[in-house]
Length: 521
Length: 89
Image 1 (tube, each protein chain N blue to C red):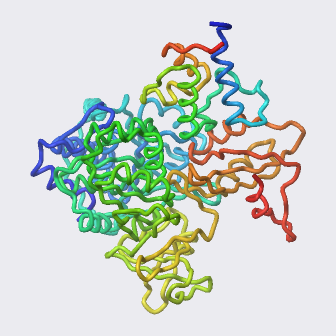
Image 2: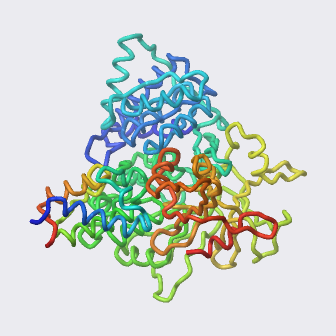
Image 3: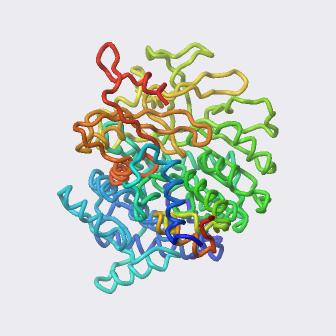
């Protein structure tokens, strides 16, 4: 089965039931409309020669329009490449340029800055489908009306995608200073969703939150799992996604039954969301992934909302969820350690590998590696990085994705997360390569040297701090540096703190001494 | 109410002290973008709202705690005034 075929039972059997609801109240559609509108978009896309093997970009705020766009693109046989609408236009244009998007669906508000950046990059500009705005699906319908008025698009059948066809590319932070695209196939996503169905048993009456932005891999569960089961998807707009009071109100007003987000969002709700003033009684499952959940906030949330089952899901974008752990009913007062990431998902296999590349002895520390149908096809246009990401068994050819995450396997509870083997950190669940921030800051004319470190932080999980030295006497202000970052990086990658030095500390081999920098507060 | 710029000054002193330590106060103007330039992250924004509610005895609605209402000192002061707040003597 391909990813877009998953909505067909809902369209057939639950046509008048809500499929996608905007949490802001801006609009909603039923299953019949989801089917019809995505068919219309498919026809238009096929009419402009989008097809199997092509990529189409989505540069839209989260809305009915963005969900329908995903299905329209998949039905045309192409892969979708979503970008963060709050990220700088330069980054989003880079991503669509890098993947060679043939078509981009965007909003009028993003058009001019995006096209300006695309022009700077050179090469062919993608065909643009421009919506006046988003909300409720009407803006996509209007854009299609206007395109159809110019040239009719003949009805075309939905593409039958093969399991290994590319379904979407999610760009994550890249250590070389440019985001890199993780290529996921229909098989990758379908296998993951089938596993979710087995474990979480969604019902037609469920109302799923969609908190994660669509360029983030948590969105795969959010979008497809409810629609696969004829349930309802409630979209949480970007502008309230870190607003705990608005989120509490949304959970209550929309009677959310299944919640999924990064732990830091649940921490915010536990601390600032005034849970006692809101009715969370519909919640039956709380899923979290993307970073370690500090026990103090998990305990606080769970005590305020005791009814649901809680699951810690673990997995990088390259594999989606690959291990899981159900949090016990009671979290004792004296527990200080985070919960483990648990057992390998039933549809996957895992091994723990030591620094020499051998399978570690039971209970020894090592890197967790994953094989199975969830594992990505590779990185877009980066064959060397793709090859380097896998361990390949010479006898069988079996590929193990090396996660970079160091774990220890405990006999009773499964894998315990220990740390990273590189400079990747997680903030609000998003991956940040500290090297990408450094590359950005090196582009500032006044900066001579820069070293970015991550520091543990009770409230935020990690704090990112940039240590810099300058070329001349004229030192840019903190405001100027942050503003500079905001023009090149998404907000979650901007360092909270800067420290200015005459020179950065060096090791005996004349490399930047990160250990010393981490100790400087 | 004293000087009409008191609200702006109070907000500016708070942001400088909490989120821009060591910054030249002249670099922070009433129109400097705060949220969209990454100077205030989500937790900083929540703390700012707490500060505004306590200092100016106002109540900020959930839908007002976003960049549209809080991205510059100008906008924050506008929100404070619209909520009936005034600088304390």
